[in-house]
Length: 201
Image (cartoon, rainbow, N blue to C red; front, side, top):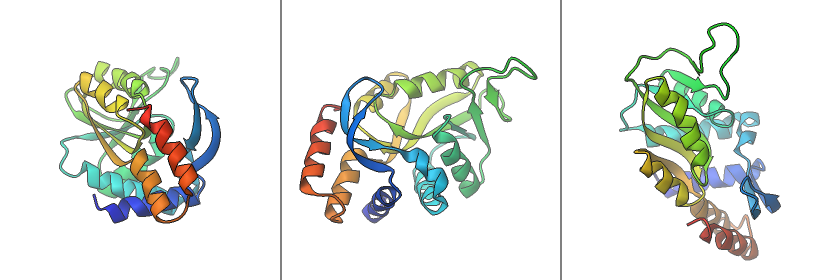
């Protein structure tokens, strides 16, 4: 992927407020000096379209039959990607319905088909492993996960242990480096982000 594309995405994410600086409590209890809120993409169609096109570049060459979005942030990205490359989509519900078909995986699929899992950000990878389980239990083959931003190496390693390859449009380190190169953020913000990210390696 061209560095210019990653720079363009980084600037667009910052412009819509998807890259925030301050003090934010993460899921694991740590305090982060920044927060990546890619759920805002749904309110900015041009940036959502850009992210989907860059995901499409990642998907080019991968072997898959269906796109599987992870609720909730991964769903609009998966829809946008499915429309861009004209591939069918499915998704696993967080909880099975207690009425109707009571199925856990929504959409059409056949046992043995390959699913490309799509989400916004990966950090530790535990949420991705949890999301893969119902897809695999339904008989789908999951070998690849594509995300917009990769925060560190832990997620890559955890997925690899489950036989899954990670593909990311941009790493968090590169995202902040691009923002600094474009003079969007200052040296202090870059240093605090990089110091925190070094703990995710």
